[in-house]
Amino acid sequence: MQPAVAYNAKEDNYLVVWMYNWSGTSIWNPNRIDGRTVKWDGSSMGSERVIISWPNRSFWTPRVTWNSFHNQYMVVWTAFDTTTGQPHNVAHAILNVYGDTLLKKL
Image (cartoon, rainbow, N blue to C red; front, top):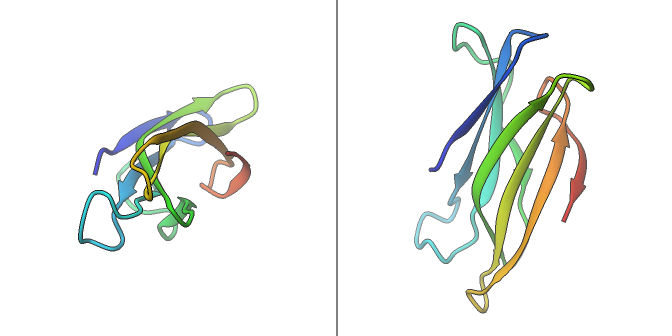
């Protein structure tokens, strides 16, 4: 749900991110943010990765951009507390060109 994509001009690949309701029962159950790098032709460059997952938090509206200077991606999202339904924060993760998480700021 709610996919976002960024193009890496140096590596000629893309990072696609989306929110995933792994419980599959309710939007108020925890959503996580997943991602996958794909080649220019749409073929996968590896397995799907969990970018962020946290107990009692639901992560929404992922967005992604590519930093050409550092050749890294940044993924941002909003977080909600699933026990109260209240917004919690906006956070981000820095990923390398393969989609591996280098840093999370929660």
